Image (cartoon, rainbow, N blue to C red; front, top):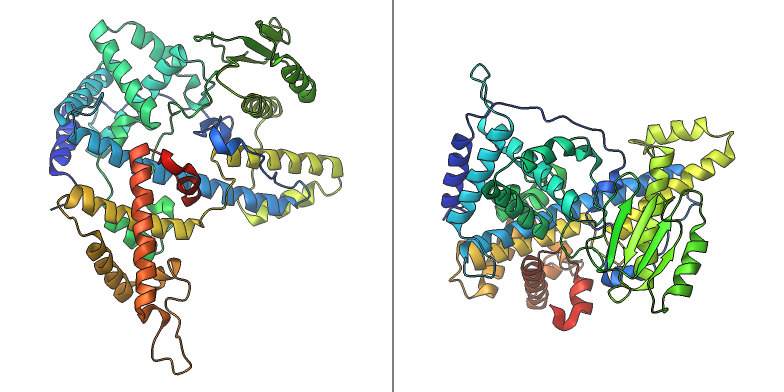
Amino acid sequence: MDFENPQRSSVSYRWCVHIASCTKYDVGSATMESEICTHRHKYPMGNIWKIMERTSTSMTYSQLGEKYQETIAEQEHRHMWLFLYSGRHAHLQLLRPDAPKGLSMLESDQLIDDTAELLQQFVPPKPWQIIPPGRQLVEELHHFCFAITYTFHRKHFADGFIDPRFEDLRPTYELFIDNLNPDKKAVVSQLHELTYKYGFVITELWDGLIDSQKLIDAFTKKRRKSEKIDKIPTFIFTKKESRPNGIQISTKKYQQKPTKPWDLAIFFNEGEKFSKIKEEIVNTWRKPTQKIIGNPENYQIALYVDRNKCKIRQLTDTLRLQVDQLDDYKNGLILIPTSVDDIVSDKDKIKSKIKEEKKMRKDLSSFIDRIRLSESLIFKHWSIERSNVRRSIGLYLWDHMNIIKPSLTNRKRLIKGLIEKIRSETPDALDFYLEKFNKHDSARKTTKFGDSELALETVVREMEADYYLTNICIENCEYLIPHDVKVGGNKY
């Protein structure tokens, strides 16, 4: 059976034909004001609120630049795998329409068609323009879907989610939505509900699945970097329940009225000391009446808090992130060096300006820590290379057990067959399961550690654990690490 679902493939083809009358359009573009704005979990929950070891400002700017590149690579790695897990979850939902709020395959096809009609209405076709290739049309539909759901979200939700690339486009899309009839507004609402659920544009999640065998080949045979994998999520949306309950956010630039009950309001203005506001939060936290901290008439950041639904640490960390973000807007972009040469050059330029260099290191260190906090890069985790290999193997096993051959019951037999295949083609990949797997176990060099039954049992057990981790990630639509599963207990 071909891994790519033939039903979904035919839908993708009909999808391209359906919107083929739409012209290529330019909805405009805006420069990203700050990369942190697109981070999915800007306001993390649970264990990741524990004290995080800060990135040292005593590191050289060159070292901080390397640390930044490593952090961004880890972030992109997590987004890719979360997208892959979420895509599997969304696919199973279509195959199981009896699930709560589940859509059938036909209903998803209809939603795609309705979205394509909205796109055609947004940019009416002109007979003299050349129809772009089918893949380009699909990408334009993903772009349109993100823009329209983002506009809907910004109008109805006060959670601080901002993507500056689409802010200038919002008035145009908002006017378009306001002029739609009730049925078409319902389509926009449904697109938003599904995109908000997964944190990715729903049309892109439905746009086929990557064969996990291709992932294994990419990460074991060719050792390609993750950005070379075809399916990378084009857009990152905010995800429902990814932010702490009880906190609603507004800024002077992007004002949002609170839509849920609150009993504490914090208004923070430029130039105020964070420590002073934090002290006031602690002092008023247990007071039963509604409290206001700061000046409601003169502020840059406003937080509306339901103290029964969040903790002080969650609130102060959220405010800290917002304050750092405000400083980024005030001071302009943090210029991140793109190569070692750039870093050395920058360092030479500021050699005589010790104070300025110190500030640059402090700003970059803070920027790195915000990414680490937003992506939960706190606990010990696999290297990207090890994670790619083991997750691709876990996904391969899951695909065979749940999609390709759902009647398959002997998982150990499947695992042993995969081990033999890897041993014959890329044996070094098994070192990620047993460090000495490919090393000789005696001076005669006639046998290796991986030849023993004990070694085989260890690798089988570890691959079973990878399957289990994959299954949990797909069931929960989350990127999890073994630590999460270990401490999660009965939750998983």
